[in-house]
Image (cartoon, rainbow, N blue to C red; front, side):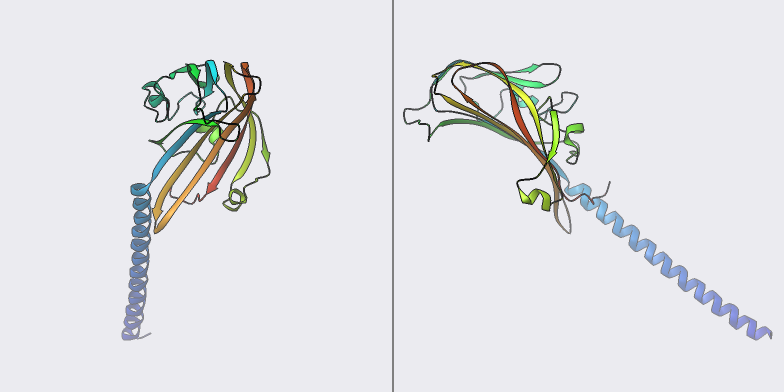
Length: 252
């Protein structure tokens, strides 16, 4: 091949190679920039929070009251609300109620003692008296909402856990799974034989972030106990857990 022809071929190869390099470089810069934006948007907007509430309801006077109520905690005993309970900074607890933390070895509990709990005069079975204490707490770490029993705040001990059909269709629609389990609480008080007392407690763990649009994932668990007449000790309590709801394609 003549020298001029070889030079033209080489020039063409160089131009093609240079063009490909520029395209590859542009794609790399774009992908790196996009990945950096996604990661920065996720990190800067990420918030993880726990929402906790407990409601005690009665339709009759109670005296010499003692409750040991499970506090949501992880397997090591760390609880998102332990500091507020320790300092009595839990909104909703009446001033005359004495509350203190109690460790059983298998669970974290709040001990509540009340000399007497006298509902207002207008209280009836259809219109019971309720006391609710609740709080929202920011978590310093991402909450494990797929497997909260392993790493996140639950009412413990978690016993006889089994997967069940979700009654709330929105749980299944969001990719979640439903479970039932048993835990226990302590109630001791004097009351009329027809007195009806309920205890309901719940905790929700949620991660939220924004990448072009708001996204989140969460779990929620609750326990409920219905009691009649005076009480004298520990009672098994049914719990429900809805876990793994939401989106899980966020950067790691």
